[in-house]
Length: 289
Image 1: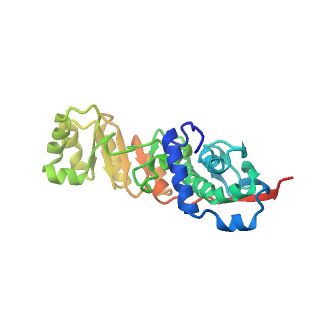
Image 2: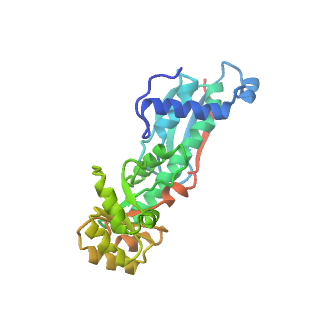
Image 3: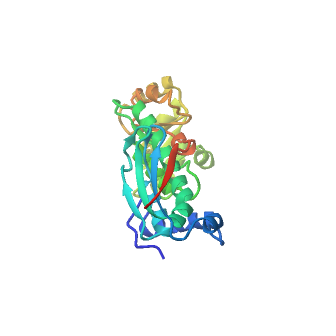
């Protein structure tokens, strides 16, 4: 039975418990860590230092801690950084002291989680730094690993992004498929507005001539999809501040600055969750006295 947990990494207490137990079950299976149980004395104790081997924006420290606590409630954990901190190579993140067997068994689950979330936060920080000084806001997307959306979007926040839709029920975004089925942008917007939802209606447009029809139909926000920088500038001038504008589609680290400088309100980047590499974070042990 796990201890009562506070909200952690974008998850409420029940979700934290479910996530940690599911990950541990995936790794331990039904028989547990047979190698550790056969080779490590039951009374052995270890001190573990978790540190980064590269420059990172860290995310997932509290969640990593819970894995160690789940297998050893008496483990002692010292957090040496906080989520969102930028750390240089060699910087310590956490020290853990406790019984060797549960610590070794929890190690991979804790590290996998910390490396994955920190990788997202680190890549996100790189994108956020590229548009620093502009008025443009970086957004994430729903391009996440199934089942991990809440913690991946948390990591994106730690890296400096704002969250776009978390789910399909917390935002209206009319895309090309909706338009095709409805027959026109105007018809799709009118249908969305007729539902009298409290949610703003955002419309995806990929040509300049779609902008005015969307605005006249009552769109509250526009998404300029896969437009060139020149088209973005033209579209921003045409909208003239009437609604917020989001630029999206194929945004890369080497293109995001030029996109942000066109005057769009937001730029969304699927890569920060979809393509972030795991951070190079290691764990070293010493035998405790």
